[in-house]
Image 1 (spheres, rainbow over the protein chains, first blue to last red):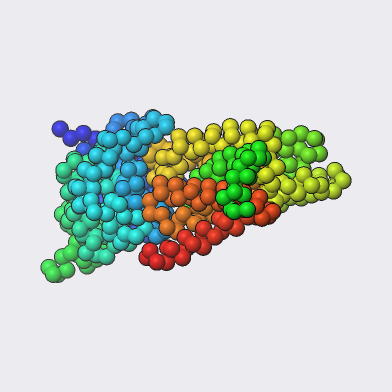
Image 2 (cartoon, helix red, strand yellow):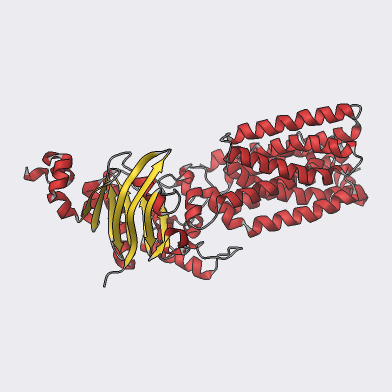
Length: 253
Length: 273
């Protein structure tokens, strides 16, 4: 039986009285890998921040594990990789291990302490993502791809039920993007974590994600990649040539 | 007389012992806070609050009260006001600091003028005079410094989280607003107890320099904090002895030693690349 871990019902969000998201409704089930795609300014990051309670909604309801967002307190069940990372500054003085360990903070009482279990969790996720050799290196000295793997480890270290990744591949080259999506897929399958990943890269993400949610202030499409590529709504939205290019089927034209 | 004999002789004096105790505690408090303030682009908050403390010290002297006791609540209020201006009034951090700092200096000058001009006491708070620290001030410094260090240790992971990534910290369930208040209040207390060491004109350097020097060479967050504390401790200890032996102003001597550490760390960082 599939369990709904996230339900969004008729969600609208406004920024300075301009409606950024309109009437968004979708459901994510345990183990889903959902790619959230759409053009610039389509509201992808706004949707993510509203789901996390970082931005207020103007209408609608968000249920995480059956609880409305205002009553949801189990933030330890959520892993998050934000779009902007301040410590991409190469002088930020933290090792990859220190950054990954922040992912173990949820659920800890004041004053927070890191114990043996936390260090073992860091070691486990570092092994899973093959970044053991990076643990003691300063985060700012790592390449973009290595930093993203460290941040992915941080998002997964406390074994969350839902992981939300906001444009994690924006600074990566196409090859690194593909391997990053595959790595997320590996974590998704091995841990049965529900993944919501925001990206512009429909073709690469579509091959790995179980569902695509195409957003342009409202939901244009929500379903599997195959259905996306055959969808008449998407053909009408993009034109058939663009749709084929996005689906990586230009050879079939 | 050899240097060791001069240092041994200095250690016999009560005022040197008091200066060493207070100086070491303030050095550690300043360096701990400095790392978070520098990385959160709040370096100049120490400078702004020191300017406010100039006015509050003048009020204390005018009322013939211990300036430190008048300064603690007033500078704490000013620190929260800067934070409010920054968060609610839409002023950038440096503008909010500049606004409150200029008000503090203007108020201090006006009060000093009403009191009949600058006197020696006010000058010692302007440029620091740790060798003249009183027993009451040592006790207040002792209690507050320990409280500040304990607070930083207790809030270490929350402070680290908001410094590394504020949005992510929110998702972790940490309220950056609350932690910012804690950070800024601790800074205000540190500034007040620190002005006796280096004075209102130089206190921000005691906060900024050890942190910036440590950032040049340390690779992890914990080592930055430990290295900054070490630089700060050595600067204060050496500064007190050098100023006693060569009859130099203690505050300026401490700051110059700190600056020397920064230059050495910067040069070392070029070779470490």
